[in-house]
Amino acid sequence: MIYIALAFYCGIHLSIVTILHPNQYVYYNAFVGGIEGAQRKFTLDYWANSYAEAVRGLENHLRAGFGPDFESREFTVAVCGPPYSARYYFPENFRFIKEDDQADFFVAFTEYDCDRSLPGRPIYEVERMGALLSVVIDRRDILAEQRRAD
Image (cartoon, rainbow, N blue to C red; front, top):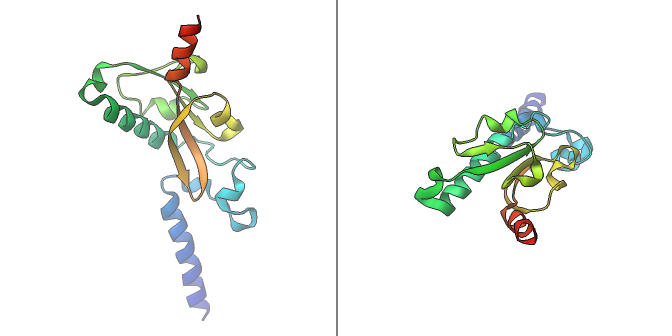
């Protein structure tokens, strides 16, 4: 009987690791409500590992929108948190800028409420088990409004 209980327990945790992959380190136990319960209370994606998926999501969104013209366009991207976690995945036509409020797109994780630090339209979200890990925010409309006002 103990072996059945142990196998069941291991099976549950194996399924959790599979669901969270490749962000297994964001796991929190049920005492805090899992990762959904830990969101905004505890550090989740402290390595910003979810940025790999977020940048791929942004690239796919832009490729779908611009088609064959995607590669000939340049897009400015700012990152909240460790920029090297996202820059590594940038295609050649993504230009990293440090001025977050001047970027076409803003990639942010939920640490320190980075995902809430700038207005814009979320176009891609990385979620696991009900918890938001990172988001890509489209700021092009806001930048266009600012240019018109100037």
